[in-house]
Amino acid sequence: MGLAKRIIPCLDVTNGRVVKGVNFLELRDAGDPVEIARRYDEQGADELTFLDITASSDNRGLILHIIEEVASQVFIPLTVGGGVREVDDVRRLLNAGADKVSINTTAVLNPAMVQAAAGRFGSQCIVVAIDAKKVDNQPFEWEVFTHGGRKATGLDAVKWAEYMVSLGAGELLVTSMDRDGTKIGFNNPLNRAISNAVEVPIIASGGVGNLQHLVDGVKEGGADAVLAASIFHYGEYTVKQAKEYMAQHGIEVRL
Amino acid sequence: MSKINIAVVDYGMGNLRSVSQALEHVAPGKNIVVTSQPDEVASAERVVFPGQGAMPDCIRELDARGLRNAVIDAAKHKPFLGICIGLQMLFEYSEEGAVPGLGLFKGNVKRFASATMVDAHGEKLKVPHMGWNQVYQAQAHPLWCGIEDGARFYYVHSYYVQPEDEAVIAGFSNYPGRFSCAIAKNNLFAVQFHPEKSAQAGLQLLSNFVNWTPN
Image (cartoon, rainbow over all chains, first blue to last red; front, side):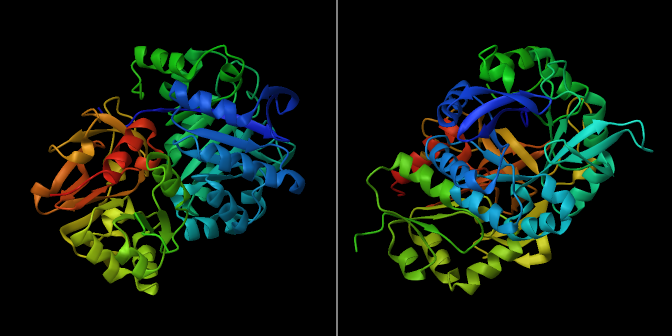
């Protein structure tokens, strides 16, 4: 047996609380981040991702405090993203206890920052998050968006993924904005195109509504890890149930 | 100043908080110090030698702080745990940047041959090798105590060690071929995976290290 596919619950954090929206809008409160992190760890989560979804300067200290508290109690990898603008933001998050830092909008505005951060801290802790949407008005299928999905960039998501890896990204978090919050499943063609194009692991994100979607994400989308939020936050499924289901469908997981 | 029970060697390459927090969790009441002072490394009862990033940078930063001799001395004489690049640096030579290591073990550090690697379903295997893989115990050792053979530990790396002397191999994983993930010799144990991020199995290994009295 070898490397297990990972299940990563994602905690969208704003003002110190975990929330979940539909297509990046309509936020609902889902609880205390430290409590939720501890629960997922007990259920066998392979990693946790925290996205600081408002990430204005006034709540930056709050997420650092949350990460410090989680990191002192939960001994699995923690990824933090949202509002990471400079190399010093990466340093602060790592020092607070994050193992990886996810960079999204800044990667588009300033790709050199990805290179600088990977050079300084190592590719293993630099995740580039790609928010992609299917488009009809471009010579490619999926376009990169920034600012929480509000701004089009004109970039081809697959080419962008390759470029980010060439600058030192150690992992890619690929979110389909068409699917996020919809519960109709990952965008597997998008994930497959990116997974085939790069050497580094990819995390599929956006759209999980049931456990079969996780299986499809691995088998059809070629994802190395699957990320989900709402199916876990509202108690529809536990992480353990998700892993058991994946194992029954021939996917190697850590049980 | 009170006696240092565990020194975590800090040579400025990234974040050692995970390592020190996990040690504090398994060794409450012990004096655990993250330090870049050679004399503190020399006086500590046990030494943890972590590492992340690229090996050439790690070696350079280690030397810049004058830590090389203190680390080599600790690796020879007191309970010593290397983690990730802290394992790789113990070897003679790394393909990463073509640099010499500390040379405590004969053998090289090699990169996964990513282009040729596929899993049982024909899927491309990614590099870095990132995630939870099974660790098989190649020999009985006090640091494996209470850990199931084949337990999963968390990895993130693109390079692995290839020791010349197979007798030092304490554990291996498959990706897709077998690679050495744990090395043991006398007072020294070193692992490629991250025990500080490996949930219960990892905490057990750290607890075993904290309580280890090598013969």
